[in-house]
Image (cartoon, rainbow, N blue to C red; front, top):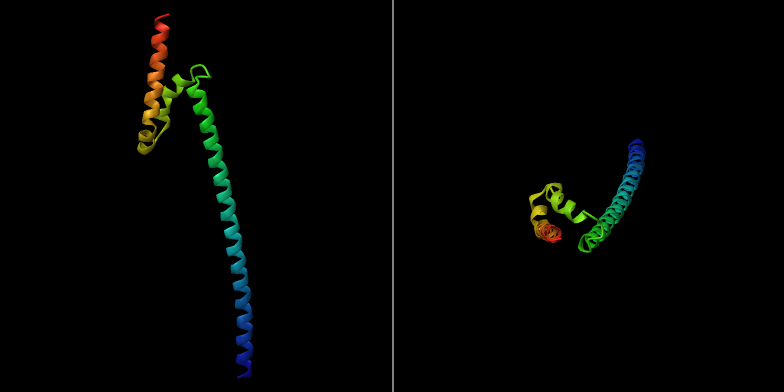
Length: 108
């Protein structure tokens, strides 16, 4: 009977180490996920800032032919129907802006 108690203690000690190792793995996985979230937020913020920069360039027509290029290519760049619907008004505004510029050029 003494032998069984000793074996039972040894088993719980081994199991305890496994539990600690699993807890450490879980903690590391949580840390990895937190870092991934931080990176995702950073990348999203970069995209937002770049988008704001591009919108300013388009609105103020600061780069020659950028409005034309965007009007011609944005729709084909977008692959999801929901994105195309979301950006539809912008694309139409750009196309009308390009049309106004062409009309001005033909009257010169």
